[in-house]
Length: 364
Ligand code: MG
Image 1 (cartoon, protein in one colour):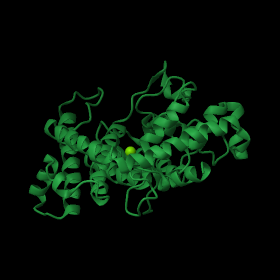
Image 2 (cartoon, protein in one colour):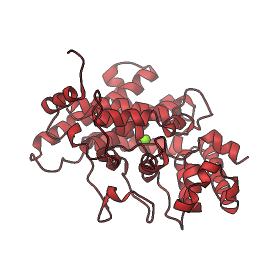
Image 3 (cartoon, protein in one colour):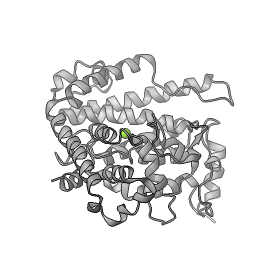
Image 4 (spheres, helix red, strand yellow):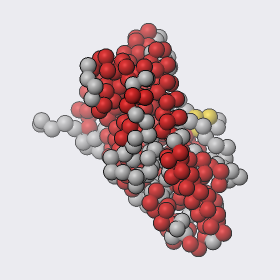
């Protein structure tokens, strides 16, 4: 037989992956036990479920930085997630970690993002101030665990524990509803190394593509970006003055530095313990901070960007109040969740799932 079965992929993982990697056979349980797939490992199956989820498709029309309706070439949450997935796979593979797991985590890492980016997130958190708050990471775990209901068993996509714990990163607001099995004595469980690799790839992706999108939106000039130390290094190493070429060289520099730095740290780390901190080398940390500070000032906080975001945030606050005052305006399948989740959390879930354009229609 020449075709590859799940067992063949798992055998290959055992022979090929580093001792720091997460083997498919250690994916942890699903909340509802399922028979193994004959062709795919548990992580490949999780990845496929995420890709087919409706919350994944909705990311196409959710803001990354430039509102999703402002231009055809700006990143949306979906294209951002695809870029993170590609980098995550590449970095995981280079370090002999599990690239299927990295891909699954990357595709799902922003599923919980509300419309209108971080400003929308703050507006929803404010609306939920007395009801358990809101954070996009925690909402991502809630999305795959509960809100995605295509199988009708109430357990969301029924993903493996390794993927679910990886999605629950960052601070969880007090009182935010999280599945009990994701916490041990109220604390988060340790995450697989692939989760931390994807987290760094998320940063690499947004630093480079936001630089690209900011230039594309004419919010700053190439001469200003050329002051950045990473830009200068990229020009020197690629020998080109082409903007696109320079931006992709910046991505390469960041990826290669991450792989080399993590590889060195792993080689020095005592076997069998917790993997060392996943980070860039010191000089690149400084360069990345410089780029982030530049983007904050010239892109994320640019008046033309903020105006659109603040309008979105205001719509979120107003729509939230309107629906709390009159829940009969909620679609019937959403109203059905009020009894279990309470009115505020139900409305919060509903708004968090909206695309930018759906929110605008719903609030006009
Ligand atoms: Mg992201």
